[in-house]
Image (cartoon, rainbow, N blue to C red; front, side, top):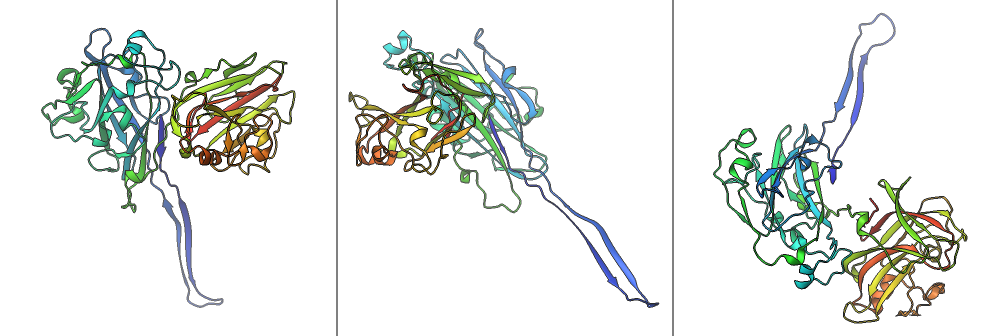
Length: 477
């Protein structure tokens, strides 16, 4: 979970001395003002949550203590972490937002970071699901519907309470990183609390508001007594979503209100979640003798890094792959990753390579035009890529990056305006940028990525961390 807090701190002190006088026995006076100070206030955003969910045994609404917590800074708390959900299941949360000792705008956003297929079972394939079973090919996000509303703290949708329309609909369309205000007005008064509630339904969600009791958080008649105020109809053809999952990041941001009247939540940059999990990566079958392992170690970010190893054989290779939602190659903004050469037979060139899996014509039905478009650090020394370090340095974390127009790639069987790519070991002159690829194949789509080591990288150990694609962190946590 992510949280952003706007905080300004300033401290100024000054002393003024007014003196009128001269030497000798003349009249005089002095006045001194000491200890003049400015002291900054605070914008200290804190969150608590109260959660309810359909019981997997009774089918009735029950409290979900694992998704509830007292007021705190967000660290590893989860608003939902439910398994074995079924059509007709419903859940409800009320989130309390506390802004500290100053008026503050409060905004929230959510972003889907993964839609794992997990596996394919017969009812899925019978319903038309073609997978593949690994990667982000799931459909559950199209069947889980949400509504958010500005609540009075009792966890019940009551008459007179307003929906947040931008956060009402299927997860696939509303969790897009756009920011919405918390509360009927986006400003939280100093020392006060705003409540925003959300309900979800596996199926068709409909509002059935309960009569307003006016008691708010102080009332005793919560959702276990009066219901959520939301109904859920799970009927219909949902089999295509069996075994599927979704992963969502939720973020809140508070910004000072005083002297900032022009601010709107919509003015914040789109929130990109970063909780993609290491289990969504797969070791590719092309590897021979190599190994990819996520390990806890000294890293550049988070707690884990990817360790790639090969054996003492020029044919040893390893690849760690991730299926991404199709991206138009023209919309590629860049990638970067950090690597550390721990061991290498060839210390000058030994490193991890990064691959974009590209469908050149953008049509998955066309055979033979899906290419591994490969970036290798030793083809991207400073003279050929101003984004990168000049050379590979053993036992040192180094960053490697490319953008649409900067960074050299190669791919066998690809011809750009520079001519045919030389492929592995090719000359710099015929290695291309992604922009040059797009110029020649304007409909090209990126369908996946991988990080690994190819042949002739024998007896090698490389750590990889902090992999970012198009602004999204695809880490190994």
